[in-house]
Image (cartoon, rainbow, N blue to C red):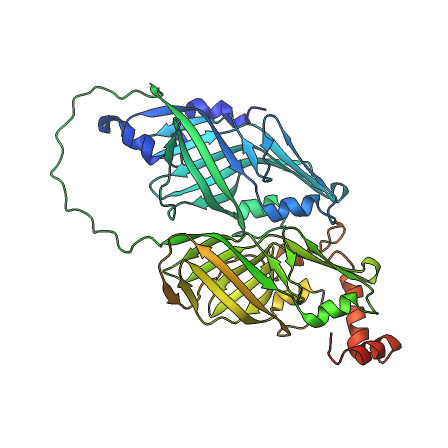
Length: 462
């Protein structure tokens, strides 16, 4: 399907708000850079929207499916490629704007979740190293055109807009959800939530200017004024997380409870995570970034663990483990759900890696909801250990800072959303949260036989 906005392509000179490739700009004659726009004749946008959202749609809660249409394709890693890009490269403004073909449809909860994104466009501004992802959105049958659903910032990319086989490329740039995007997702995620990185490729026909420059004689110009002040500050140095793993057991007494005589449950390790044999689990394949100047670490790990008991009334997934710097320590997430605070006073980069060993962890305020009220805020959890490898990072020691976003457990947190009538339970807990609370209360407070049996077998509280 061609985008409705293709009708505007011929007049995009007036609408350009995106970014241009440094390679393409440098290749054009200087005299043309303030007068000429060229047509983008091919290209693509590759974007996964959000991996945890895709997993949720096709998982055991939503029981849904993801379909692509009109030339879009889903890649082996779950991301989507929208091809057939057409648009404008503006050498004067140093901008790109292009529209692609195809769409992706997310469907789940027997239609209570029904979201179509199509006619993906992007804009990119090489002056501000930023851009936007725009789409026509249909949510539960209600269409909205030209919704700016995500923003991206490539100021931290070492070599943006490289030239490969005639295409200007921008690869793996982090994206974040906008206010309009949050509305498009019906509040499923809050504005500022980190989304999947985007990759863009475009080919510009430099032999076909849209508005050839005029040949008028130049007029006398005024004497140049004083130069502007030198820009202050250096761009932050961001180092890619290229590997590593995290080890965590959640909480020993919780594991014992799940597999014990009350819950009669089981614990299942989800690939590529592994059971360490000591009650902890290893989450491998770390990815993310470390910003040296601000001591900000954001690293995600693959795999998960499922805790199942009470014939399905307790069904908890710990997936997509993530550690991220906050002021005074680290935060631990499952997907976008904040679950624990990790006490780490300093992060040390040594030999190209950051290692944290047996750092104390406690239930965060948002983690109370993640555990279905099973544990109050501040409850001790198992210690957390992890190592992340960094590309070309020098040795340094710093105090973690920042607010990485993601789930906060507040009203705007999708992991705490339970919309009446929508049929969408809270994401981490697939069983009844009320049942879990009642079971916990029975175990901790009641004097029934089950509680006494548990007390005899373990001199610990669940």
